[in-house]
Length: 168
Image 1 (tube, rainbow, N blue to C red):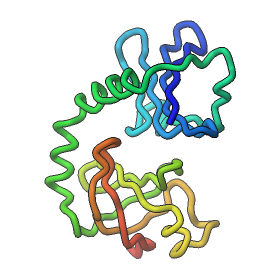
Image 2: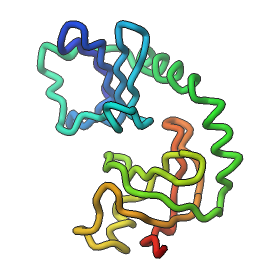
Image 3: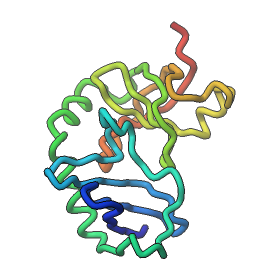
């Protein structure tokens, strides 16, 4: 992975990206001048799940390479702000538990699902979801049922398995 920062417009904060060699963003943060932040692993009231929708042209002079350690330090600080809630989610949503939710967004890592229980974010395998859901039905708001198979500590997401259409 490659790591970059950018100040795209004055007053818009500093953007930080983790991208693959093709410029596809996997994680993204915006650190605002007032200290607030928008982070791609959590739904933001105004910006939803914010992640670059197109590959980043890392040759563009806006993007400055940064050390992985800087990105990880900023990401870890962000995770600390929601650690209490994340630990509560893991206690409430145990492995093997059936959960319900709805599709929120499609990321390179998979399909993000807002879980109705505990306001958690789940991650479903998009290819597996394709197997049980016609593509024309896969859209934000589509309701589904799944089983908790684990936890993604890096993003504070609940990993989902056995995804199927929500029948209620």
